[in-house]
Amino acid sequence: MTSTQASTQDRRTFAIIAHPDAGKTTLTEKLLLFGGAIHTAGEVKARGQNRRARSDWMKIEQQRGISVTSSVMTFETQGLTFNLLDTPGHEDFSEDTYRTLTAVDSAVMVLDAARGIEAQTLKLFEVCRLRNVPIITFINKVDRDGRDGFSLLDEVADQLQLDVCPMSWPIGMGADFEAIYDLDRNRLTQPIRGEDAIVTQCTGTDDPQLDALLTPAGVKLFREEVELAQGGYSTWDAERYRAGDLTPVYFGSALREFGISELIDALARFAPGPRVQPATPQPVSPEDPNVTGFIFKVQANMNPMHRDRIAFMRLCSGRFRRGMKLNQVGTGKSIAVHSPILFFAHEREVVDDAFPGDIIGIPNHGTLRVGDTLTDGPPVSITGLPNFAPEILRRVVLKDPTKTKQLRKALDDMAEEGVTQVFHPNIGSQWIVGVVGQLQLDVLISRLEAEYRVDAALEPSPWDTARWIASDDPAIMKAFADTHRSTTATDRDGAAVFMAKSGWDLNYAVERNPGIRFTATKERE
Ligand code: G4P
Figure 1: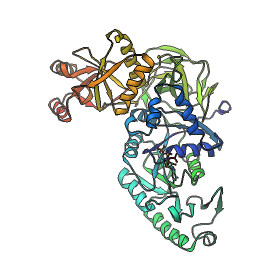
Figure 2: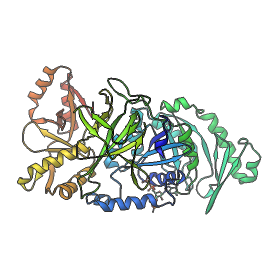
Figure 3: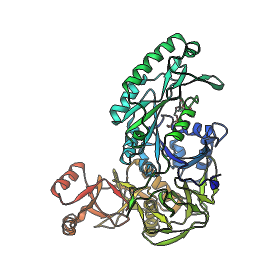
Figure 4: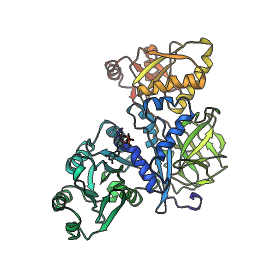
């Protein structure tokens, strides 16, 4: 298993980004199946259902039929370890997804061949672009009638301002679908219902074998299209892909298992291993012998019987060994990691060691927070884990006033996990919670009840949006705080926040206060 591997570049840590329904779950399952981590299709869903049954607050997931929590799945093939970080696809719950994307080295963007780029694809892509995360595009559902390949490639190029390079091409779509041709390696893959696909090695797109294997209409159209596609789009350039400037595009069907091996091969051949992580005082290289990692997600109460939390740490450098003591940068606390957990498709295992690119779960009782850096070397802080300005602000109203302490604890816990943000207004004693999507509010109320036995309600607050505020000049900051006492607050880390009643209100404050920076994301430093 992982313990025998020591190279820093044999990990492929990636996420799948997709709009809901594009086929992310199906593709995840097929990657695990082809990667040998599961043996029958359906296990991923089954596992999800077991896990959901375990915890009360996850009832929301069942009611809404969506997955709120993200997890990590590992499979090993071609001498490499693939760590697939699952991200919730629901539009309402994107903050967690964004943070998960800070822990990957590359991404697979799944598009529905009939729909192309959708709202959530665009948002997620933008997060990847912020960090120059290289993207492989998988155009899914070619077994159904979809848009033609050119229109899809043009859409990716135009909407994402990204060069595209078709790496495979479908022969027909929907009812006319015949095969997929791997343009890079000149292989034709033909599906046979109920059996393994037939793969034929060709000499090129003019190989006469194709005339025998495909329908005359199919092969004619294929040759015309490929000529146009190869002339009209970028040629393959691994460096430009790794810089995030070009995306290789594969066509396939997750459901019918076409194009999955090609996608795994592409990840193995092209996707980067662990990248250098932005950090202060200097970036962290995977070759660095000190162990350094950062927490990108905390999940509480995976088992409601014990108030356990799992902090997900992305290892950035060094060789991690079980039982190691790591320092929590910032607090200076030393944390002994006795039972780190590695995640597999359908189970968890305690690991003895881990390498850069790996994700390990660290059970703890609330010490570890999203954004924390842990290291056994000199203090260093991984940067770039964003908090997003909330788009919904609510006042928390406690029904039983004797539960103030519990409420504070619950809100602090959830702020620490990154479920919601909590603001303490400079005037008044009520807490304001801020979220980026409605679903987070449902999660909050349901968890308050189930885990903390706190009966609380959320009422509209006078504010519509919030921004973190900062200034290089403390006098300007103080003057602003003095004149805006009723509209400023502090977040859980004590950072100053301005709350606005409307977009207009916010713009007005921004225009009137050029010495103040208003930011929609706050990076943990
Ligand atoms: P998501 O995680 O991105 O939300 O998508 P998911 O995989 O759940 O897929 C959404 C729907 O699209 C599912 O159908 C799934 O079976 C279907 N699908 C995924 N890949 C393909 C494909 O390559 N071809 C075709 N034709 N369909 C595909 P559903 O009816 O909503 O769910 P289910 O009852 O099949 O589970």
